[in-house]
Image (cartoon, rainbow, N blue to C red; front, side):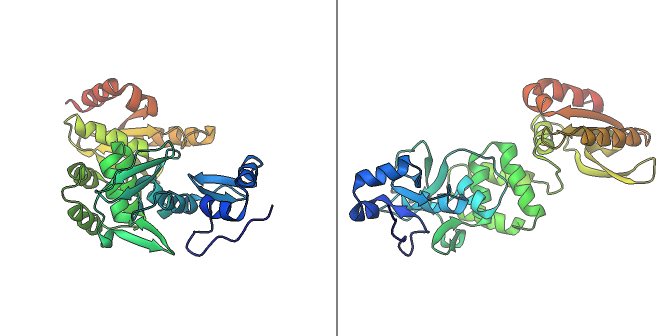
Amino acid sequence: MSWFEPQPGDGGLLRRSALIRLEDPTLVDKALRQKQVVRVHRGIYKEGEPPDDRERAWAACATVGGCAAVASHRTAARVLGLEVPAGGPDEVTIPRCERRPHRTDLRFHTSVVAPEDVLDLDGLRVTTVARTLVDLARTEEEYRAVWAVERALLRTRVTREELDDAIRRCRGTPGVLRARRLVAAARPLSGSPLETAGRLALVEDGLEEPEVQMPITRADGRNAYVDLAYRRLRKGFEFDGRSEHGMEMAVFEDRDRENQIVLRDLTIYRFSWFDVFRRRAQYLRTVRGAIGA
């Protein structure tokens, strides 16, 4: 069967309500089974290839109906190219007066979104970088939210002033105090999500915040950076992320770098994802013992 052209404003996608006015509903269902079209969200399809992040965001907003929806949280982050985990349902924000049950593939947030916090991307309404990061800081796992803010700051996608303004406009919104705390905890020099998680765990445990990416001159004269360090105590902490150190060469390079740093009278302790997330108490005891806390 041949498909009609999507209407202007439909983001290049197909609405079932429009399709069945032109085609027998059984033919539409058959096309779905034969994968001529793919379902994006309830009642909204795409012909051919699976949808990209922008198309999913458009469909998530379009499927709401009856109110002004804004792509937000992880969905907005993906459209804007921010650091968020893969997977999970799409997310949109709707006015507080609206109530919609969550779906398996779509999560609804009710909140006031100021006009200054909305971008119009050729008809797609999406929260700004600053508002998206604030929303993540309100709802995401702490280290993931802080890492997203850190990467955005490092890449000059947002400024702290813009984040502060977005937080101020969210006054009274659940989680805004948490968002203020996590935004303040962001350190753009952080080298990985694991490093961020390790640092946040130390601060939460009442320890002095370590220096991030402390520069040091190696014994061979080259520059190096220690993930976290207490400079005065000459103690450093390196974090081996699974993705960053999946190749043997990366591990060997790290070991060589560590050996060179040790020669500079800096004691290095090395931790993995397992240490920080699965053996957190032991990780904290080790650091406390290292710094005499």
